[in-house]
Amino acid sequence: MKKILTIAYIILVFSIQGFTQKENALIREGNKLYDEKKFPEAEIEYRKSLEVAPKSFKGNFNLADALYEQKNYEEALKMFNEIASQKTSKNVKAEAYHNLGNTFLDMQELEKSIEAYKNALRNNPNDKETKYNLEYAKQLLKKQQQQQQQQDQNKDNKDQEDKDKKDENKDKQDQNKDENKQDQNKDQQDKNEDKKDENKDKQNQDQQKQDQDKKDQQKQDQQKQQQQPQPKEISKKDAERMLQALKNGEKETLEKLKKAKVAKAQRVKIEKDW
Image (cartoon, rainbow, N blue to C red; front, top):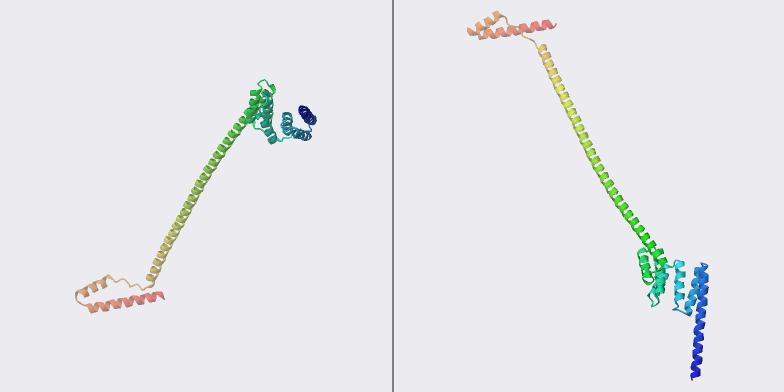
């Protein structure tokens, strides 16, 4: 029985050694391809090694590196985070956080990148490359913030300029409206003045017509008066006789005398026209 156990133990040891050798061979092949920058081919070899040893630190770490080089950042981040969260040595954690910082840096997530580098330095304070990357990420973040502030300032300035321009245009429009209104009022005043002048001219014309009509009427009246027979002026002697006749009650004699005078005047007028 003891002999059987010994044989089983020997078989187990040789099996583990066989798996380890196969894993190492696949990782070495992947590293060779990685150095030749054949990252997709390297990824394949690393995944083969993980089929042999799924929890292999070297296989997982190198696979994450190959994914990073292919810009498959999401999967690389996931793997680096898993490695960093495992119970392993501080140096391993430091390397995982360092590569995590590099991945965030390439994704332009600078604040996360800075935090990852700080975690790497907490596990390995003497890592010069991590210190350099941390300062570089800080400078990029500072520059990014300055650019953002400048963009915000430019936007504020542009918004203010647009507002000022809009206000200026509104003032100009209001001014044009006032000027147009003034012009309209002036036009209306001019029209009213013209109408007033027209009315005045019409009144003058009417007055002139009335004056002319009056003159014409007067002229017509004068012509009619001239055409009518004019009684001859009574002499002083006749007037005395008429007066005397009135006094004496000789009314009949006076009437006869009047008729005689009128008839005589008419005959004289007729004779004159001929």
